[in-house]
Length: 194
Length: 376
Image 1 (cartoon, each protein chain N blue to C red):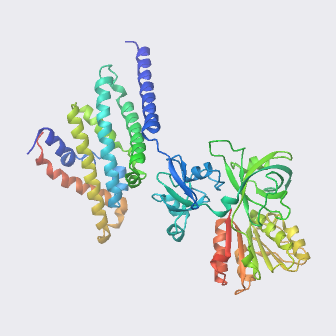
Image 2: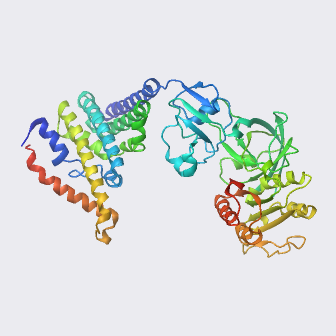
């Protein structure tokens, strides 16, 4: 059983998984989990953007919004930062690593509308995390989301071998699969002490 | 604190944030993401340095070659094809859709989708090398039907501009200046290549279109700019001794008119089939010309086809006792064109017509490389 920063990190990955316990970032989680390489690229993009934006948002919150008592602008400011960071990262990766850029393809700009990114920044602010905690929480959440989408795409590869109830349809099947995964992740709750 | 100063402060903060984020994005793009110059080698000539980061299409145009393209580099028209030997990078999804797998393997790319990032070795298409930038003046405009217009234009510059029957030009909506991607569309030339000073276009008016309403409102004396000629839907030396099959749908008739006029100028024209299709009788806008042409030239077989809309009077006379074929032009082709005839086919019309005609002709024993097509 672990606490402190390690606990926060493990909780972000397993017990408080942003996709499976908070149900955030579900659109790409469901739609891009058909193929493992695509899921991995998306997970990497999410982790990258999540970390950078959470840190920037923490700085803006602590240095600008709280001192001037304008916390109500939080959502707007966070969304603007996410959009800009996505643009900048896309331009930088395109310039310096065309191979990674090609692997990301359309997913990097898609990250801008992933609500898990905004969610992590907001949770960090609601829970009054310090700088280091925010950083650890953001990296952990990104890894957690990546783990979840990778497991999901691995499971979906095996769906061809089973016959889920037809009435569920493809979306229903994946939702059921996601809820079973959430239950399984919930069983890890003894791992972390809060 | 009052509500108004509070509102002002909030607005100021958001504006300042948006402004600084925009500046940050611009700064990153301008400073950190600047590409070094990259050598570009066209057709194995000496490499020339071009600005990196731009599309191959922009780089080739910057070198002064008139590569065709009518979608403004958006990767939808599929016209700016080039063989890229080296340095083309990953294929874009648009290329996988618009270029056949065999051509992709042979290195054919869409120049607008290839980014110049490293040393590139590419080959210009033959027509792009020969194409010139042309200034012309409208000499007359005539309505052929309610939707199709005939535009006659006089070539002003360059003097002695030539084209082959069946080729097309890229019309510009305005005089192309430095920078910016001008709006262009492709139009086939409908007149005899032997008289290249005044050339003819058939323009189908597309209501709400970006180009045709403007083009159809040109009046005599107005200037036009285009580049060309482009396109390989032509007859070459190697085609002598074989019959010619022209299949046209709608304004796809235009290049066929040019081909037939050029054949009529030969001493011994080959037997030529002209299958012209339209939705209704009025859509066969040059029917009378074709009937007269076929009456004068025994080598020409004209087969007009209408899909037989119910609102059309059943005019089966077609002049000179010639009947209209009913149904699709490809069905008429199937019925009338004898299988096993050594022939060269020229197809111009909507994509589905061209695809259907290809399979009909292949079924009649034509070699796929003898079937040349332009889609509208």
